Image (cartoon, rainbow, N blue to C red):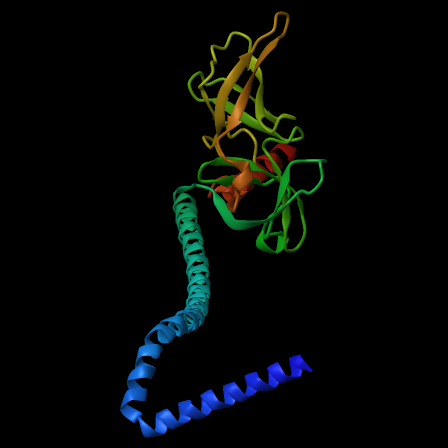
Length: 293
């Protein structure tokens, strides 16, 4: 009963104070304004802290969002720039390849014009995928006048010889293949021998006379004794000379002049000399005269 009276009295006191406050606000406006200003200073400072925090948070969110939008634009711009750079790099590579191909064709053309042999230009379109032999495939064949046993060269030197043909392509056995054999000549000593391939991807000059003074560094060229190549085409340089006791001949290892792993365009020698047909006719006439009684 005492607790109820105390609660009732507190409510009456709160109502009376609220009524007096309202009366003071309406009847004494100037005094109440000063009182509110006096109370509002500390209250405003207290309320300003969370308001400032909310304002700073809002500003930070806004700046972050603007930065994100700007970053998305930069990323898109970078993506477009990277794509443009890739396109330019691709075009640059194509131009470089075109320039390199033009230089190779120009060198090949000059060599062809200076050569005394009849030749057919061809491109390397494939390589042997097996381990049976070292060879490359050309895009010229029987329809272009290419036949087996014809020599194949570049301006740098000897590549190999044709071993198989069809109507539109042909197979070249490289000078480094053990099954290949080309008549060679040491330029300095004028000693002749047979150039054969080795299992190590190089070549070897065999059957050098035992008393020959060949030495590493000597250059080997074609001797012209076989029909596939004219005389004087570069084969390579001697790197090591071998002479064993009891042997009848010397032999020497050759580093090929042509980088056979980077062949692009070659020349097929269809006739070692321009007057090959006339020479062939002359030989036929000689043989014919010998057969006559």
